[in-house]
Amino acid sequence: MARPVLHNDALRQDLLTATADLVAREGPGRVALRDVAAAAQTSTTAIYSLFGGKSQLLTAVMDHGFRSFHDSQQAAAPGGLRSLGVAYRTWALEHQALYRLMFGGAMAAYTECQPSPEVAAGAMAPLVEAVASAQSAGTLLQAPVEAVATAIWGQVHGLVSLELARVGPPETDWPAAYSSALDAMIRGWTA
Image (cartoon, rainbow, N blue to C red):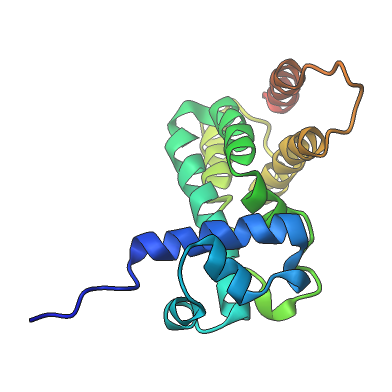
């Protein structure tokens, strides 16, 4: 008789989600594995079995975030730059804990808990490819692809970060502001 699988992908996902939520609330230094296990309704043994320890768990959470972000960008890529921009904001609003963990600097002091470089770099590959494609089609200004992609990323990232931080006048219509900024950004790069 086969042993039942105790530590499956669903539990792994629950642990990643619970960790992201706890880090967003408490900061990485205050997250204890027993708290993560309790939030995911499992034991610390499951964490050690699936991840190895706290630093590996935190790295896995960041990698998971960047992969999820990449997948949303890849799905939006056929729609072009505007679609990528909309997907960026949508993903950030739907995954606020992961977004803050990935881009909020909470992990800066934990050098052993940085995302895997190839995973983090790959997250923006759909944008880089969209820029290169638009330049090849002659619809986007010719400039170094990486520089254009980084400039676009910075603009959408800044607006989303302001919205999530609730920085701005209280009456700010964030969806309208973001849409207007996307239109202006695209016009600014149009050939």
